[in-house]
Image (tube, rainbow, N blue to C red; front, side, top):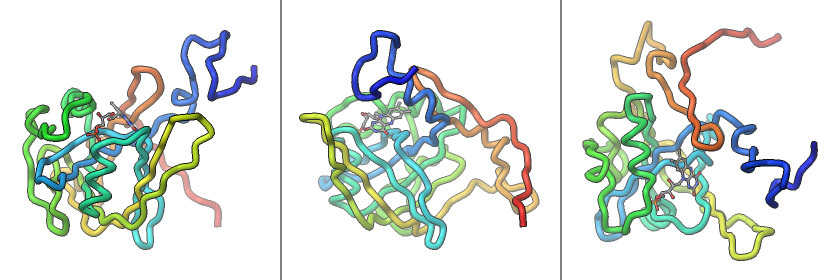
Length: 198
Ligand SMILES: Cc1cc2nc3c(=O)[nH]c(=O)nc-3n(C[C@H](O)[C@H](O)[C@H](O)COP(=O)(O)O)c2cc1C
């Protein structure tokens, strides 16, 4: 079947697009507000978009605290979500007032960053400190729906030493969580190599 992804289809219980474009990495974004309150929220419209220099993006549907804080401070930290942090990550997705510290809400520990003022999640096995380069209001064909994208350069990377095996990051051992559609998630538990052609 074909369907218009931006309208409710009578043939579909829920829109399947996010279940099809899957799995999506989770950008667990920590920021600090202009008044000094730490903020933490998950974004599955997130990705690594360049490697020289390393750059990342995340996009918000509507106006969200992470976007305002990242743009006003010019910084954020991406934190890796492992399977054991699934519940904590989910707790940081609730809609709360901007003055609520979501690290405290989710029972997480702040660790100081090296190059940005936003803290990283101490329990996360890896983190990327990011400096905002651009923020782009995305053109929207739907009335009263506003989406925005933040693009940033990675200025410092953190990895928990226990995840390094022979100098390589052990992706499977990190039990990385990723977002599917509906209420579903997946975890990286199978890895296989494939050599590129010459
Ligand atoms: C796994 C997951 C992924 C999410 N991805 C996004 C996303 O890509 N864009 C978005 O606007 N909201 C997304 N959300 C919802 C936000 O996390 C939620 O609106 C949160 O309250 C925003 O917090 P903030 O206002 O502190 O930034 C996601 C939620 C979850 C649980």
